[in-house]
Length: 75
Image 1 (tube, rainbow, N blue to C red):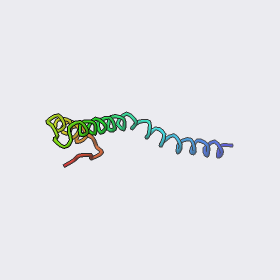
Image 2: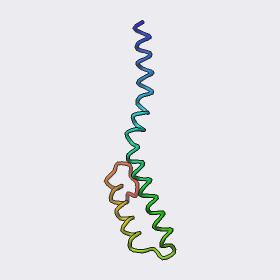
Image 3: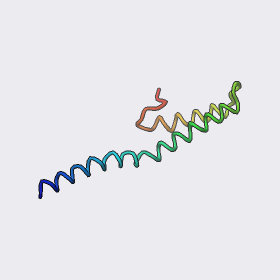
Image 4: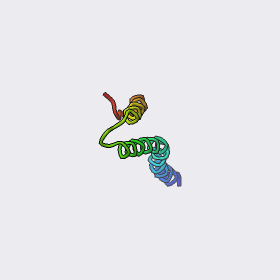
């Protein structure tokens, strides 16, 4: 019985880890996608003559991501 308990606990642990990883990163994924959609909207509005607003938005996105450990927009 003890071995069965350990097996079940191990399986629960292996299922729980990826679920917590996804749940923990949903907020960041939502922020990244909102930033991307905002930039796309700006490009649609001003293309082919980009404005300073687009450059400002890109700078904000770069600063946010540069401090993150993911490496997006890192130079």
